[in-house]
Structure formats: structure tokens, C-alpha cells
Length: 238
Ligand SMILES: O=c1ccn([C@@H]2O[C@H](COP(=O)(O)O)[C@@H](O)[C@H]2O)c(=O)[nH]1
Image (tube, rainbow, N blue to C red; front, side):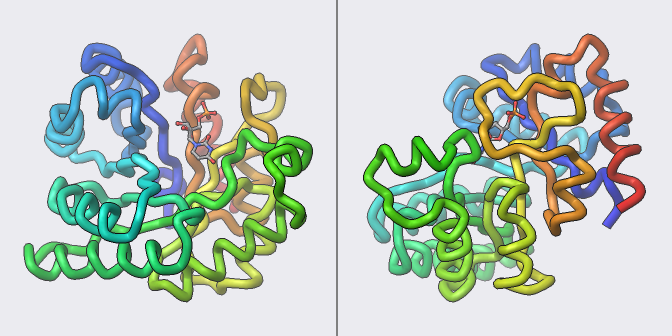
């Protein structure tokens, strides 16, 4: 896969104006964008239509987390929207993961469309071992991430969201075809912000990540296009 099929820029904005300005500025350098809760709750499907018109791929990052029936029915509504990737929280458990995978596959077949990839969020990249323990978790955080990845794979999910720090362990446990989508990417010298488990673009790919999700290191840069192109150049060697 080429670097610009593996770099996903997070559109963490609340208006179409900000989206259009960034997407126009990044032009052909970036082909894959993540639409998260802030943007989707602010502008709804308008952003999906806009990105489709621009021939961009979309990861619709709504992180569904509810009982199996509710998640499955919600995913049925989302499947036809044209996003290339959707997600749920692995914390929902095996029954929810299985219902989610079946809902997306069934709806894509009914609509005769290519099935969007469905991935499961493991443990948020903002959490470190201390915070993980503070919510009563006794297992080691990285071990639980791998456990979630195995459960997701067994339920028919295409991959996981995890930090680049667990990518090598997940690759070893789940094989080469499993998607490992890693936020928590910070190029050398950039602000960590609220992320805890981070790595550089090169480090994430070397560890086995399939896709890198990058927001502020691009969107808050003085020159976002230059920042994205530097990241793509760093990814080129992998
Ligand atoms: O564990 C997770 C899951 C999702 N995210 C999302 O990725 C981007 C990262 O943005 P940065 O500005 O590069 O930190 C953001 O949209 C998060 O909602 C995550 O960071 N960690």
C-alpha cells in the first residue's frame, strides 16, 4: 500500500468551512480522512457527501458502544453512507462484536456494495497504565489490547484501533491481514497533547501498523500540507 493510502488525517472540526479549507489546502497529498464525533454531530452527512465528491476515502469514527441489538441496528444505518471504515468499542464484548460484524456484512450484501471495513477500538491511546489501573483494571494494558484484538478477530471484525506501542504484539497475535489502525502518532519534536501511548510515523509502521491516524500534528501545523508531506516522506521508506 502507498503511504497516502495508509495516512488518515483526522478532521477534528465543527464546521464545513474548516473542513473545506483544510481538504483544499492538502489537495492530492491526502486521500483518506477521519470524521469523528465532533464533526459528524455538528454537520451530519454533509461532510460525507463533500468528501465523496472530492474522491476521498472516509473513516467514520463514531466508536459505537452499546448492547448488541442497538449497535447492530445503528451499523445498518451507517453502512450505506459510503464510508470505507466504521468502528465500535471492543469493550462491548464478543456478542456485540459478532452482531456488529454480521450487521455490516449483511447490509453491504443487501445493498450490493463493497463491505466497509469494521474495526474495534481497544484501549484509548490517551490512557497510560496508571489511568488504566485507576479504573479498576488489573491486567497489564498491553496484554488487554492484544486480548481485545484476538476477541475482535474471532468475532469477524477486520481490525483494531490501538496505539503504535501495541502494534507489534497485535501483528504477531492476529497475522498480516488484520488491520491495525494507530492514532497516537507524533512526529519527532511535536506536542504530545492528550495522547499517552505514542510513536513516530516510522516507529508505528515498523511495528506493523496498517494505517496511521494523525490529527493535530497536521491540522494545527503552521503549514498543514508541508507537515503532511513530511509525514508521507517519513512513511515512504517503510
Ligand atoms: O484510541 C484512540 C482512538 C481514536 N483516537 C482519535 O484519533 C485522533 C487523533 O488525533 P491527534 O490530534 O493526532 O491526537 C482523534 O480524532 C481521536 O479522536 C485517538 O486519538 N485514540
